[in-house]
Image (cartoon, rainbow, N blue to C red; front, top):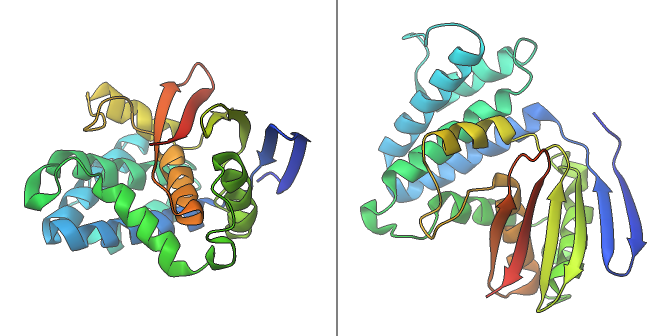
Length: 236
């Protein structure tokens, strides 16, 4: 897809043209599902697989096959059909987040987003941010460092960052790859336990910022698909 290129417009604005490999994104989402299942148990993978298969089959104008079962088989099915549905990543994202929404409040999960915790755990355990952990407490600088460090993984979505007041940053996604999954979740009335719309892209950025700064942040999606998506990462 697009070449990785960072363009620093000023001390308070930053644009990154990301490079995203769909198959890598799918594998990352599968790993996130497996990590989330450590909290919820086997039921989570069963539910996530079922929802992802249904989403993918609908996009392919097929009926969900009874011969495709389990997270591994569903993931392989999605990857094998990327030529027919290039947005297959959304199938896995939809499955993971719908299962997480459905199970919120069970097994002691409460309002803490399990999928968010899983993604943060994966980033931490990968060690990719080790060299920059603790190097800044500024959210804008942390966002720049995070996107610059992880761009080699080819899972960075194009975005524009603007520094705000009170250690806050505004993030604009011109054309997010997760939109179809987010639209489906929104149409089903599934939103964050603490209120507001979910945003997979902001989840990843927020997790990276927390790891780097060693501080607590939260994200808010203020505009969805208009046609850009606009949100904030802020210190809490």
